[in-house]
Length: 383
Image 1: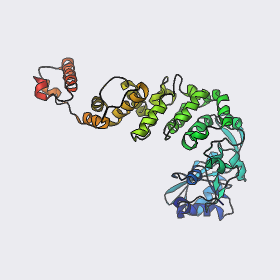
Image 2: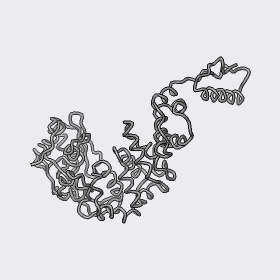
Image 3: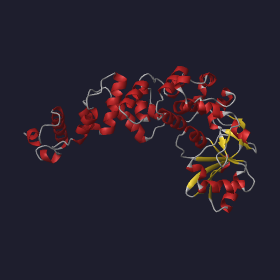
């Protein structure tokens, strides 16, 4: 008998939520990411519970038990119950009645098997009771152990229910799949056959999935498969995945944490910010990186102009995209530049210079100072 264990399972706050449901003769199970992650030893952040109790009944039982119930998605069967300060997302068993590739018309069910069959992948349809005992109605455990990402039952049908599942297939492979084992052939073929459905998805949903995918430890094999099937071209027209694996390699060599925007910069493509509906800060960061790649600036100069984080990102991108060599002691050089302070102020040139002439001369002096490797003094510059 397989069980999930962890402080989050036995926590009194969580057990109180289960008691509110099971003491009233309702079924209740942990489900999804919390079960999956616990089984592979990954961290658990969100607690999802599936039950046969209808949403109004969940609200009633939670409040009777002295717990806070919030109807966060009650129209879709979801109630968030806060116990001990911990949010528990509780969703009633459902089965799909009708789908259009983006939204589904659902009906409530009393059977966990119905709820399992409407999920996307077998590894996300593993349940666990309040004591951690695993309930595996669709044999997701063998897939999880083999690190195999497989659609539930018919892959083509699962994708047509929600075309975002194409991107989720590659994202879950990047995070949980076994590169040595390759991707599930049926799932890959179904993704390739349904790429036209990606156009029906909102840019916000696409962008969120792509950022999650690119945050994986090594998304390169998944993105390469996306290019092979034509998916990446649907998401980012004109993009190319070949430099991503080089970037991931140098990130690992330099012990640099993954950054989805840095990685996005290696893909290229047309209008990435708009295509993925990036935030203003994300779009600004991406534009900054792309504009500074290939400019030939020394590491210290990049540090001075861009700051430590962005400067190091540009150095990594130069390595990946242009096959340049990382400068010796690159981090120290960037830090040296980031700490450098231009010694001349506008007030030092006034009142002899004002307006545009002042700005132009200040810029000229700064260029000379940078060219001197930040060594020219204020006196030397002004003389």
